[in-house]
Figure 1 (cartoon, each protein chain N blue to C red):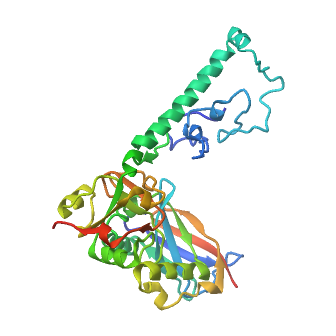
Figure 2 (cartoon, helix red, strand yellow; figure 1 turned 45 degrees about the horizontal axis):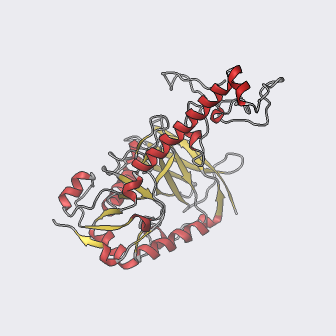
Figure 3 (spheres, one colour; figure 1 turned 90 degrees about the vertical axis):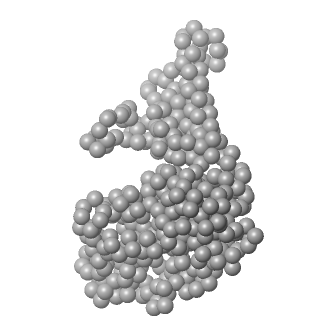
Length: 221
Length: 144
């Protein structure tokens, strides 16, 4: 098995399993072949290869649970299932409540908050453009795409407070607060570091966010 | 990307010889944790098909955008991954970006005032390692 850990990552590169966001179990870097070792194997440490037979004399999989228990394999299978379920629950919990996955480093924005509103703090130019175009753009003024950052925190009306909390480079003059459902597909910020990339509880979307003029409000200066 | 760092970009033909294609707009894209973070126009090639990109130029651009979009450009260049990407956009991609800028901002992007000659070539994107202080990157391209 090519999968092992070393305390010094720089010194010895190791195979890292490929992950699929459609399968939370694949995000667990410490599981082997998504906890299905009796059916598939992982020759290079990246992903399971179900075309490769595990060995020439594969273990007979018995349907009868009692015989499995006697052989001690049913317990093992249960343990695998249990671990897989725990991993799935762990990821689901992260997605629901937000937090950092210690294994993958992924940062999840809290879903419960995303069901409320999202707020974006703006300068005067962005506020004016958003009001006239009806969108918070997902491109810069040169047309280059960029993830649009928002916060899932309750909106603040204090410009100075927002500048400080979200580590903004200048004092904002406006905020746009829209229902999270209006913001399209929200995900974690690209850098996965909500406290350094603008601070606070952040999320980002790759889509433009439709916004109505009445949803853009001036802040108290 | 590190402070004081320079990136030397050179368009090359299939033999690796310099390709003298002028006025080609070069994009540079930065990533964090492997995720696209932001991208800028790095500049345009000279008549020898080369371009020098400096940290200071890019950081000024990032800082200017950060003042425009307060929440989107707070990740500094040196916080991005050490792998960045050099992209030569096709003419269609340039027109698409021009349209988006017009749609959302109502004005022509600055770069569109003198249209780049990207339609004259096709080129492949290149990822580059920015761990060295001086980075040289050859972009394979050919005249259409």
